[in-house]
Length: 510
Image (tube, rainbow, N blue to C red; front, side):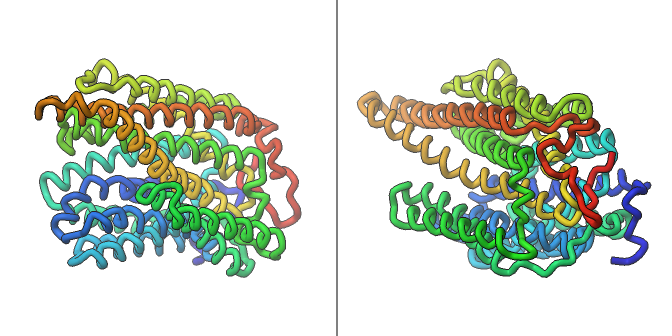
């Protein structure tokens, strides 16, 4: 790293707020990409002649590469330097996006999506760990993580809007090309503005056995849930993938206990507070994916919204997330313990979900859907902000990248599980309802109404499950997380972060 990039650990970076702009821009690009392609998928399928069987791979290729390589990417950031990893991740993501936009066939598109996921796995943990080591003062850290949390939470809904606009008024290829200006601006800004604190690198050798085991284990887990969605939970392939994931991840834990320089130091995840964050956040993301997935289909198919209008319908949720993150979470984070923000936040979101279980064939958007979305946004925004901060609070700088990667891993794996689990629940509930009401379809109009009602029954059943999952996330956050105020003396309670040896400097110094 050039000497001009390094700062003494005790001196705050005078350009840290400018750095936040470019870190936030990169995070927005990664989060957008999780949903922007979904809207464009039907157009891309028709244009490239992608079969129905291969269609899911446009989403799955990205999820497998991203989820499987996140811990590897986080450790690369610790070893190689976060700024350098950040810029390389941005550059690679832009090139992969250009390849996807220019795709001439299915194989080229799937390859581009896998490359996007791989470079995203470098970029995402580098961005969050840069934030963690750049903002060390409690109130500034609260504000910075509030902005980052709003981007992380609301970016998916913004992706739906942007995907709808680009697909409807331009071409599906622009859902890929739009990443290039994001990446160019963020990379140029990072080179000029971001300075990584000195002494934060992990100089140990890379744990190759750990990399292989955790990557194969996470890929097996994510792919297992994907196959469960298409083949069923009892199929031999699905069961085999879950068994393989269990064996590989179990072997990974054994290796990490023995090796001198582990890929994932177990102290990072066995810490009570960080473990509580990873678990509750992963569950909450399962619940959120239920909302995005089913409400998108409900608005477009049942209520007849256009792709653009569907994206606009999610805007109040984005506004709620920004408000919850920057106004509620950021203002209270330095005054109250994290669990008194996360648990109530997840509960408020669950109340919004509870409202949305009442959807019907002619539900009023202003009367039911709007308040449900606002409560979801406020709750998740309030909870996300302290979760993002606490997940990297008290870690040694040499572990900041892998701790950040665990946040993204819990969200990515949660998203994959949520999509498969809730899709299966919805499909089963719809099939059961339709079987019981097949005799009601006496005319074409009645048949259409029965079909739509069957869809609504499936969606509403899945949203009930999402409600229960969010309540469980709230309970886990309240019971497991016992850290005090980030600015208080109990900030690292239960973490073991207070006990450091000569060369281990915590990220936060109070």
